[in-house]
Length: 359
Image 1 (tube, rainbow, N blue to C red):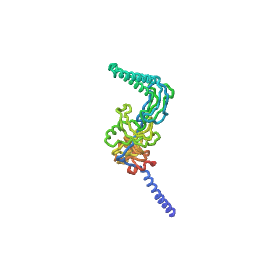
Image 2 (image 1 turned 90 degrees about the vertical axis):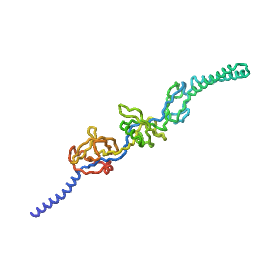
Image 3 (image 1 turned 45 degrees about the vertical axis):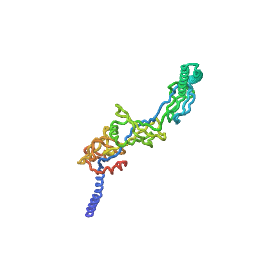
């Protein structure tokens, strides 16, 4: 009987000893992780949809009526300034030029004959002056017809790339008909719309260094050359509250083409920014909240204002302060006014672990 009682007591002691660490471990595991916002100088990248345009993009149109006799370029070809692109056979100006040249020859002969007579005092000086004026008039008319005749030659006004040809050989073109377009892609203009708040920040910080401008192309690769904001349009769009900016990007390799799209990235410096982990927030009716732990270890939901978004982090502009403690993990395990046990971890140690899956 004594042996039985001793055995029972031993079992109870062993059971108590073995259960105690488990209970302590369970209590330790039930503690939630808490941190505080980090206040520091940082940068944030704002991204805007951009429309890419050539610095010069013009239409080439026929200046005179006639048949398209020759086309010296193909679609997509690079051409140099002054290069002959199209030749139009004029229906009228060729004959007019020949006629004007004949009249110049006639006036020249008449002037020379009159001059000989005037040198011999056979005719009055006035007749010589009239013959000279007639010659100049004929020469002016010839120059005018030559100019019109040159209009049948379409040349490149600058270096650029030829777009689609709108007419084919042998087509009858009228004055003003579109032949093709020419784009100078040596530099590209990228237009993007900026909200009023960023515009005001940009203008007030313009005395500082110009913000860095990058371009994310449609294939999600970064364009290798940075750009520069050079122009802001005059008016805001009352419907969207945005104003167009224009950034200029060098395009030495010709990678960018007129009409492309991309995302402009602006790196903006932030002074004393308040940073919190994105996973410490939850959303109710499209508003962001965090659980703030008060002095009694109770959690209180507080709405916050998000100024910018970074990788795994939010920049908070209102709702909490740097001294507040916020719940980092276990947001679904608590409700408003719950009392919790927690461990505190500094945000500087939290940030490197944010990409790890939360418990």
